[in-house]
Image (cartoon, rainbow, N blue to C red; front, side, top):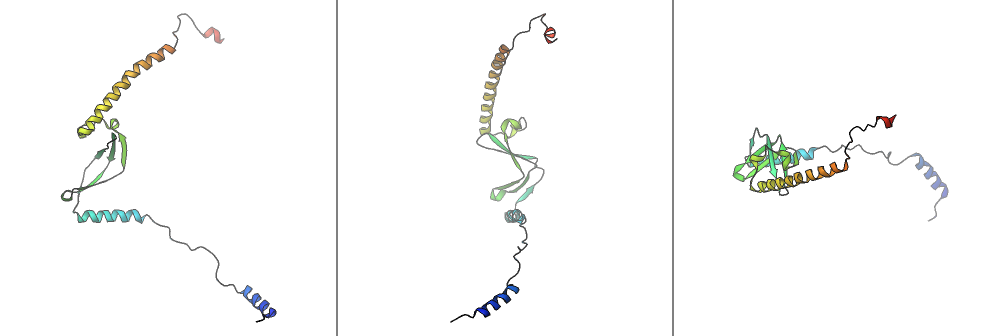
Length: 157
């Protein structure tokens, strides 16, 4: 079937004036909010309510002793406990600290495993103190003794 070139040109001219579709601008989508964290917290609270968890007030701090000798220290901690289900929840921002950073207030909380770590720490401190005087003597050897009566003022002028 032959195509009439005049009609085709006329249709192309008309279609150029009438655009199909709109401008290509992006749709404004709502930015995602932090509802995910709130959802998790809400779900956790609902599960704790099912377990009949009780909030314990006036807990100043909580410490969790790790196997590597470090301590997870919670300051200003919130605690909920469901004793019948053997469940405890601690809220707060933990800080990982060394055992010696929390002395002497942490001694009453130490168990048998932590006492072993404490004895290892004491042994390390003794070794460090034994090395310190030897290092000080080496440093003293490098410094020359001052001679009485010798001044450096004359050399400066």
